[in-house]
Image 1 (cartoon, rainbow, N blue to C red):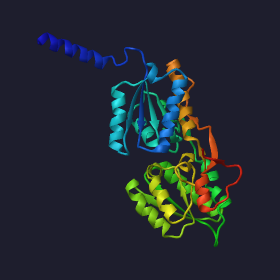
Image 2: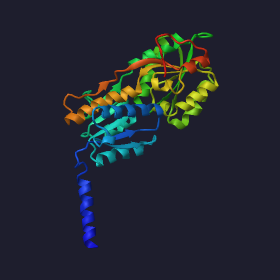
Image 3: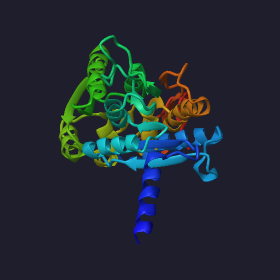
Image 4: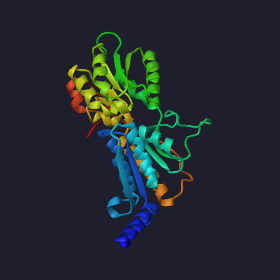
Length: 320
């Protein structure tokens, strides 16, 4: 019995101290919450790794996947667990996961997706430099100008200037900054903007109902984790009041929004996966840096356009 116990302890200790003795790289993938649109980035990321020879099914990669289901303390625990497991790299999706990972490790390479630039996430150092271990793909807010200004090009005002309603998570730096940017865009283009803050997905139904009671003409869904996580609530409420939804996120068009100019979420993840694959091949981050998302597109939902009787410009692609 004692010999068996001694053998068990030695085996357990060896397993804890040599997690990657087989040489297979380990990816810790952290999703901040459950969302069909965000999920596309994970699919793209894993497809890029597979194409480059890192495939869990073929035994050339191990993946530890965790989803925090919108709970920040859980997300922190997930990142700390990845660190304890000495993962080869951490993949983060979206910005909440990226920020949490950066706050907890300075040595493990982090490959972000569906995240704004480090500057927008307020994670640059005092010299304006991003974390040395941050890679992957981010986005700046310039594209929101094009996204928001689709509204007056597509929707004809019935009486006076169009009124646009928005909600935003006041605890997300990029969401607050996008609102400030949109306020100026609205003023410069003679659009009336009504924006109301939310603190969590639990607030969305009530705040959206409040916006809809103010006779808005259009709802604009900006890049915001709360908006992503509660989009079905938003679209259902807007459809009941016959209010079309525009967005800056192409993936939300598949979920019922009318039109968007924004990043292809799958390709965003794929681009991040290609960068991660380069690191796994070379085992070196020299020459790597975070990149801007490359693929953006104008898309529309034909069923939604038909519902609202809205004609869409010819340079928009219908969702498949």
